[in-house]
Image (cartoon, rainbow, N blue to C red; front, side):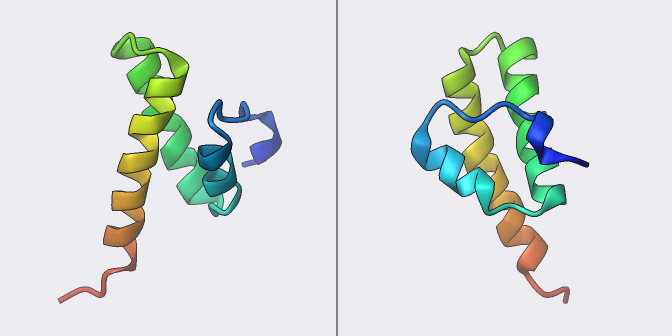
Amino acid sequence: MDASHFPIPCDPLIAAFVATLDEDGREYFEERAAVAEFEGNLPRAEAEAQAHRLTVAYLQRREKPAG
């Protein structure tokens, strides 16, 4: 998926974090932000902050060895 069609996050620190994500991580972030914004009625900046926290946790789980 081409990340260039995604919006640039409102917060510069979150934007810098998102720039480091691989395709899967970026899609995970964007999906969480969209759900929080549109289904949760959060302002975009709050939705991105929530998505950032969830994405960090997701990446930690993804890197944890099985077993």
